[in-house]
Amino acid sequence: MTAPRSDAPAAPDLPFEKALEQLEEIVRRLERGDVPLDESVAIYERGEMLKRHCEQLLKRAEARIQRITLGPEGRAEGVAPLDVE
Image 1 (spheres, helix red, strand yellow):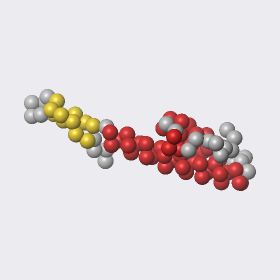
Image 2 (cartoon, one colour; image 1 turned 120 degrees about the horizontal axis):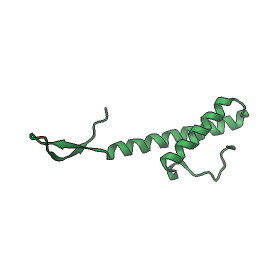
Image 3 (cartoon, rainbow, N blue to C red; image 1 turned 60 degrees about the vertical axis):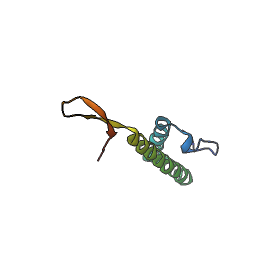
């Protein structure tokens, strides 16, 4: 992967999977330690943006997940928000 280009898609336009893929590549490059300092700073900043984007997408997905509620007889009665905590 080369340095982020000015025409690289902004994070809000990326689906979760693509954003995560780009973030993983940034981490690999930074861990190798063979990227010049200026480029390291630029890709680190891109990585931070991608990380925030992935977190937002996950929060939205969690908010959409529902759990089935059961009545006293054990039958499905409705749905309620999923409590993930």
